[in-house]
Image 1 (cartoon, rainbow, N blue to C red):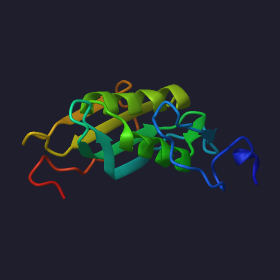
Image 2: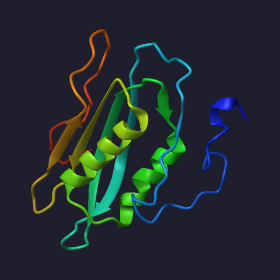
Image 3: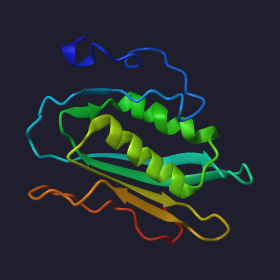
Length: 153
């Protein structure tokens, strides 16, 4: 393996889905394009968590955008981290902001935002947005591409 992956514990390994976000291990790799201004986008259109009151499943379309600094998130660890919410009870706002903060703490990116587009609960969709600050000048940040709720698809 390359020196970029020397310290990874999940990539290339059979790794079970963590039982909770607290147990999930997010990993990072050095950014081979450090110093360049570019945007990375992860889209998770089938995110699930549990309502903390009823235990019923909640569903969201997540879009995570970030401008890397010295680090990139390793994508398998991100998939496992997001999957760990499947049996986790938390409100939409808590899930969305917790994911953004955990990534920002791990990566120290130049900028990061997350959009959580939640499907209706009780007939009302809830959209949650969080970012680390203003968008740095000179970077193209496309629209997240998730329309306002109209029977999301």
